[in-house]
Length: 116
Image 1 (cartoon, rainbow, N blue to C red):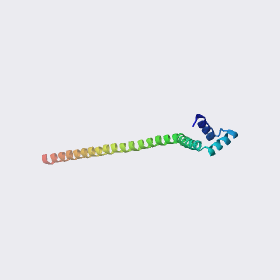
Image 2: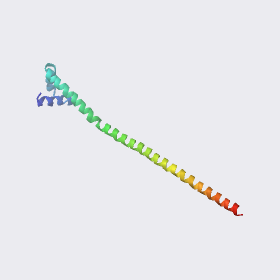
Image 3: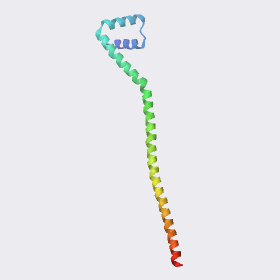
Image 4: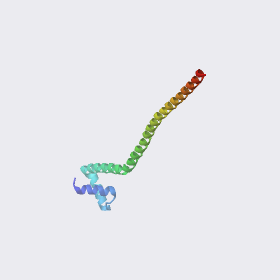
């Protein structure tokens, strides 16, 4: 294939061929099997690239959105784990303080009863 053929392929796909060029192009597609095969390959590649370029933005937006959501989710889980650890430590401290107060009160009562 020549460079001019690929230029014609692109012009055809974009719709820039004149009426005469279009009829010549269609005739060549019907009569030249190698030209038709090259055009089909070019058209498939062009369609694929157009699809990729067109969908690049939504795909990248989707990936960015997914990153944000997963980051928020896993950070929330991490924060909950930290809070639950802190919460259980807080309960332990409260229990120890209450136990110390009870022991202190028992000690005071015992001393008052024994000394009186």
